Image (cartoon, rainbow, N blue to C red; front, side, top):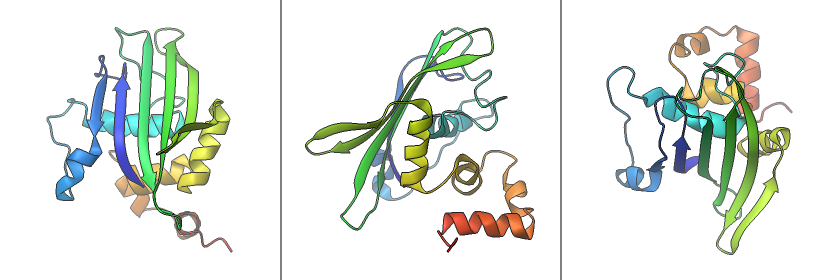
Length: 179
C-alpha cells in the first residue's frame, strides 16, 4: 500500500482541515515524522487507521475521546494506491463522525471509493461494508494492520512477544498462506 493523500480535521489536536501529500513527501524515497511529545505524530497514524477501519486502537471502544474537545465534527480521508496485475489502483476512504456526548462520537458517513482517470466510483457507503472493502483490498484486518504496518507506541514489544501460534496465524494472513 502506497499512501497518496491524508486529510483530517477535528481529530485530537488537529482542529482545522490538514492535508498531507505523500507523493510530495516521498519524492526522495523516504520521509520521517518528527516533533516533540504531544505534537500530533501518532494522531496522523491514527487518522489513517480511523479512515481505513473506522476506529483507533488506542481509543476506548475504538472512538471514545478521539474528537478535539472544541469541535463537534471529525473528518478523515485517506487516498492510497495498491499494486495489481493490471497496474496500480487508487482508492479513497472517507469517514465523518459527529459528537454524541463529551467522549463519544457517532459515524455519520463512510465511503470506499475507487479513483480512476475516468472519475470516481463509490464501492461501499455503509460502515461495515466500507471496512469489509478495506480488508478485502488491503488484505489485512485492523489488528494485523496495526501490528505490522502502523505499530503504535508500545505495540512493537507486543508484536515481538506474540506466541508461536498467534505469530504464525498473523503471518499466514499477512502473506496469504492460509491454504
